[in-house]
Length: 114
Image (tube, rainbow, N blue to C red; front, side, top):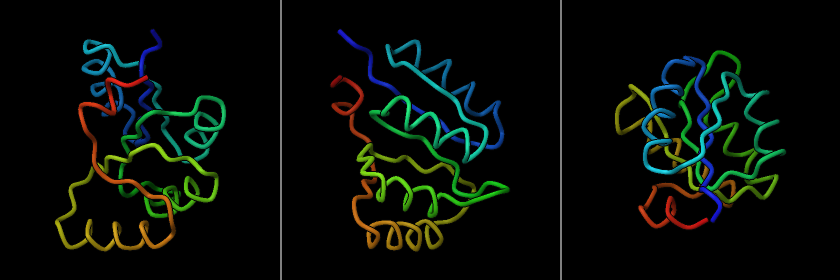
């Protein structure tokens, strides 16, 4: 059985490594991207089952990456990570869902199916 693939994109690589440590212990394969460019290459090469994404990175934002995912028909659920409040997250959700194809939230079933 193939492990589900989680891609974490965060400019603070240590955060991805911590998430990866936990994910590997529950049977999830992990790939960590430290930039938007690295993330896009990983997504093209390894279609993820789920994505954990920092909302704000130096060269881009989650909104732009989610729009890129929708344009490229990447339908993996996206879990946003941020220190922002609910209002900013709601605005991002509205923007991304309007772009088509964004899927927010994560279920245990999404991680278990592979």
